[in-house]
Structures are given as structure tokens and as C-alpha cells.
Image (cartoon, rainbow, N blue to C red):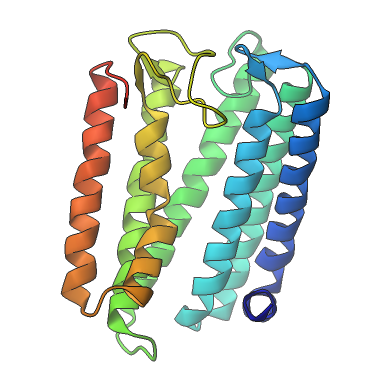
Length: 252
């Protein structure tokens, strides 16, 4: 309860927007159980569920750490951009899913092509803006929070940006599977391909440094060096999954 109240105090906009996305994710769970609309051989609402959940977690994370900058004007601008970008992305993904169509990599008509292109442009803008937030965390020198935590936030943002932009590889290829076609037969829910390389694995693991590194920095790392070493080892492992996928090899 403390966390919820504190998050609402720190950033009301991202708090309420994350709550909306958690509710949307819950609705998708119901739709997964009650509908038989499918895309690429899996229930169509699995993808919107994953995106709503991911957006909610992202907003919780950024809503929690942004106040440390003491830059209310910049935080307000970032909030507005995040809400606009994620709302557009969610609407396109959910609308396409409800109609049994791909949202990403869909170039079967000019409308679907431009919906996909605008999603990519919007996400790149938000990602680069998040990188600017990371720059502000590096620029600030005086902190009232532990430095391993600060470094966890800094490195978490840096590698979030790197692996978010890795999504551009999938956009260029118009698929996420290397050595085979996108489709069913993946791991439960996450649907990572069990037979071929899957670029989504590094994308997922890399982007969630945004949550992992600050948590390790705050709860486990005793020094700044500890979190830096942990981050480098983790990123090497994630990079390994990217190379593995590019070679067309499955994770397992």
C-alpha cells in the first residue's frame, strides 16, 4: 500500500496511466479465455496483453525514478509524450488484434503499413527521449539516494535504450524469427520460438534492465562498482542471446 501511495504522490499521471494499462491487461486475459480470434496461430489478445503489461511496468518504473531529477517541467513533458505514444500504440495493436490482423510488420495495405510505420517512429522518439532522461541522471552530481542505486538507474536507462532500438532490426526484417517464419509453436504466453532464432528475447531481456538494474543497485549492490560489474555481465549475456538469434539458433 505504501508503494502505491508513494507512486501516486511522485507522479500522478504515470500512476493513473499504469493503472489503466493494468486493467486493460486484465481485460485481455478474459478475452484470451473467451475468444478464438487468432493471429499467426496464437490467440490474438496475447500480444495486446503483453504490451499493456509492459507499458504499465514501464510507467510505474519511470513514475518512480523521475522525481529524483527534480526537473518538474521536463518530467511533465515526458509524461505527456509517453501517454500519447503508448495510447497510439495500444489502440493500433488492440484494433488489429481484434480483427485478426498483425499490427507489427503488417504491410498488406497502405493503411496498415503507415500505422506500423508511425508506431515505429513514435517509439523511437520516446526511446530517444528516455535516453535524454538518462543523460540528465548522469549530469546530476548531488544525490540523496545511494550511489549504487543511482548507477543502477543510469545503466538501466542506457541499456533499455540500446535494446529498445534493437527492435529496429525486427522492423527492417519485418519479422522477429531468424531461420524460420513467425508463428505458433513457441514457449507458453511469451511465445519465444523453440526451433529458430528469436530477436524478441534480447529485446525483452535488454529493455527490462530498466527495472532490474535499479533493483539490484538498491537492494543488493554494496558499491557502485558492484552494480557496474553486474550490469556488464548481464549485458554480455543478453548480447549473447542476440547473437544466438541472429545465427538462427533457439534459446533452448
